[in-house]
Length: 380
Image (cartoon, rainbow, N blue to C red; front, side, top):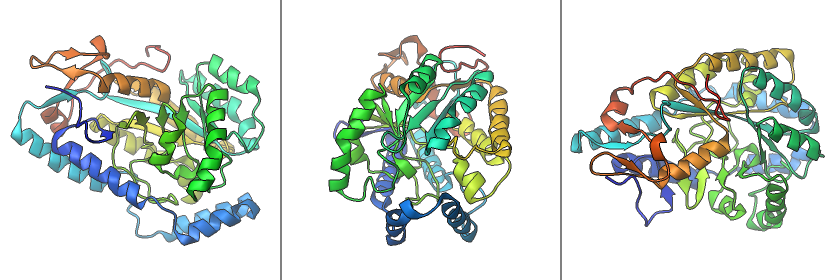
């Protein structure tokens, strides 16, 4: 059995069969609908002159006014319903259907910590947040805006030396990167220059606005501008997928854990239950828990402590691969280039790290593992 995909499409997912069709349909639906409303286009034109306190007041007002959003909005229920139906159909056609497990041995799921640094004030809080993560044995990816504030090369090199990753977060975070092809083309070369300057391999668009056809031209190894579901974003919706996938030669890493800004600013929540509950869901489906937080919003002792609580919760988890985005991207490429033989032997770049996952097992709940590996190879 081959784990590769239809060569006629530029999308490659973790699953084949009808499950693949569901993944592709949800992605294409999101790609078609990922557009800003006239109200948001006006907002981003005026945003440079709107003070931060007023922006946050507007965001809280919008969050509280969205009364039709379910309490478990951070779970992609519509996607998973479609996925389960397709998975059941695939299993009925072949009860022994098997794929390469999304993650290397012996892990059931993956977790990745990322940060988007939006302001100069946020830059000043990076070191404290990085030290907190390090105290729990974690490393993360820090996405900096190259043309908004000064970024000292010493900070970039220090983070890398400590085992963290650095990525590029758009151009200047004005919300207009995809407002027109002319604007994007004008900014494309400077963004690529920043990727080269930071020696980065990853990109995330500001406000998770997204146009993967255009982002592909940045030639980054991976993009992290999509999400599985998030009704509170200006470009709401979501691709559904809780696993990485490939768009042509670029790996897409959707974030799957609610953003701190949404929870703590827009919704004024003061606990981490949304994170812990979503983590359980992702574990059930062997998914990827990618978290986006901002030092700019973890700027009070209360929010800082909420993040600390989540790190403590993560530290208690078993069978989780804690990895940097660049490590996930590299793994996903190796997985995509590997195959399963007729005798259920795995061949290709994954080597002896590859493991198998029966679709019936996934449908009814996968087995558990015990070993935890953090980014950089340390075992916990």
